[in-house]
Amino acid sequence: MKKLIVCLSIIFGLAAAVRGLAQTPQPRTLTLAEAVRTVLARNNSLKEAEDTMAVFEARVGQSKTRLMPNVRADLAYTRIAPTEEIDIPGFGVFQLFPANNYDFHAGVNQLVYDFNRTKETVNLSRSQVESAADRWEILKRDLAFQTCQLFHSIVFLQDTIRVQTETIKTLDDHLAVARKKLEAGTATELEVLNTQVRLVTAQNQVVDLNDALEKQMLGLRRLMGIEDQTPLELQGGFKYEPQALDPEGLVREAEQTRLETKAVQDVIRSADIQIRLAELSDRPSLSVNVLAGWKSGYIPNLNVWKLNYVAAVQANVPIFNGHLARSMKAEAEANLRTLRDRNKDVEGMIRMEVLQAAADVKAAAQKLESVEINVVRAKKASEYAKSRYEAGTVTNLDLLDTEDAYAQAELVRLQALYQFVLSKLTLQRAVGNPLSE
Image (tube, rainbow, N blue to C red; front, side):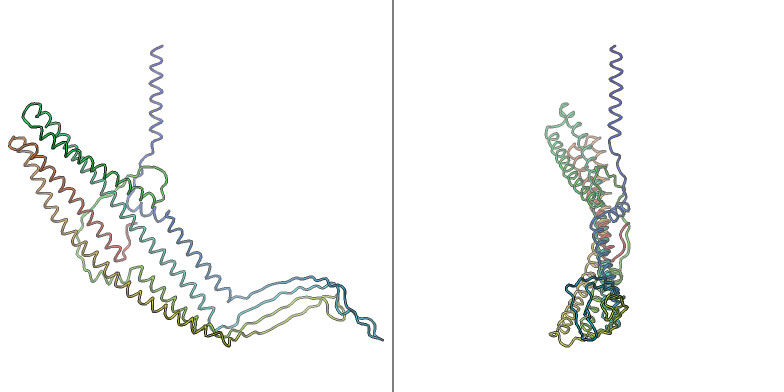
């Protein structure tokens, strides 16, 4: 009986363990390109911008309606009582209008000419679609840039935690050795206390790093639209790829490729159209109206439906509107001047951003080269101190100092490499080159 209970306990325990493993979500591997694609496919801000473009595209269709005929149909029935009659001696009694009146007709109104005012209105609507598309492209680029920043920040924090974790393991080993030497009387309590202080400091740094990593992960999840708690396993690293930079050449390239330049030019085109519309606002327009159908009430047979039609040509000629057209044109011209000033500001901003980013890349590359040399030196010093410690010529604290210097050199190298990658990413954005997708 006891054996049966033990077997059943083992079986249920294994089943619970398997069920727990099955419920544990598997980590999702994620590359930088996959992260950017996910953000661009699921971000709500982009969807909102797409809906805004659809609104302006619908307005283009609305603007075109004035170029098409306006067709309508009307059907009316009217009951009139009492009906008036007239008695003409020798001719009889005549009813002036029927009691039951029927009227059915269809009408067409067609704009013939308005000095291209409607055409310019359509062009203005199309330019607004272009401006909305520009804003969508800029938002798309900024989201990709933000995703790349978060992704690299997370990779940097993970690598930093890895280095700090190795440092903690080394300090644990030193603490164990220091305690054994203290028990043997070959070391002082000072060595143990110093090692403990360094160990606690390193552990606290890892706690802070994990907190920062969790916050960055939450930011990446929000951008990607991930609501579940599936762990993310980022695949990527930092590479140092030096390259020759021509700052002035990059500025010229940015002036051709930056989305802000195109956006301002599109808005300027819209302002030009608004000036032309203001000039045309007091021009006459010509239209044709045709109305045809059947109607009762014609003398002498008042109750018989009769075919009838009306054709008219209508000219709308503004005479005086309080100088509205002149005021509208003045406003549009002032707006155009403002946009041209903004275009100059954008050109200056682009130049400044490119030159600053190029300078940052150059400085980061120079720093990284010097840091690489320092890491090699710190490693040699650590290896030398370890051999001298084994020979008994240096203390545990001396070895800890050299190993700590080596770990700090690795962290500085990692920080410099991270800054180099971010600087290159910023330069890509400043020039207008596409980011990783």
